[in-house]
Image (tube, rainbow, N blue to C red; front, top):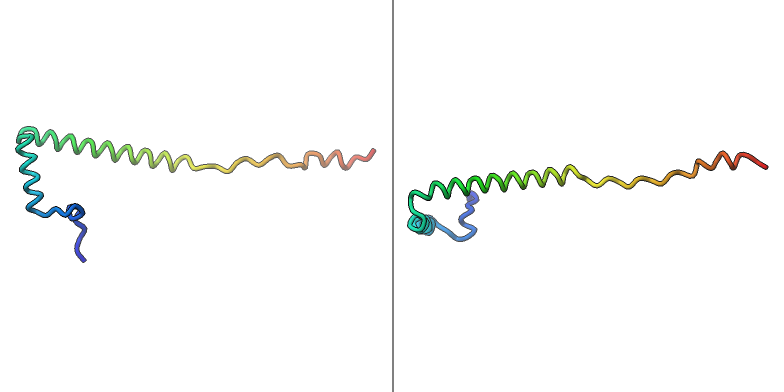
Length: 83
């Protein structure tokens, strides 16, 4: 069994990935690449944090069963008294 390769989903191999990275390097320049990578990392971290918080909030607020109406045993005292 072959290990999971996320790039295989889009049909990208090593050569295609290299071309894409070279195009990104030409478009943004070598000085901006670390900034872009840092920004992407921070965005991924914040997205993961927000996802966890929403998941925890949904798990915390589970629906509770509705309260049952009062029983009719309160009227039993009246039925024992005969007039």
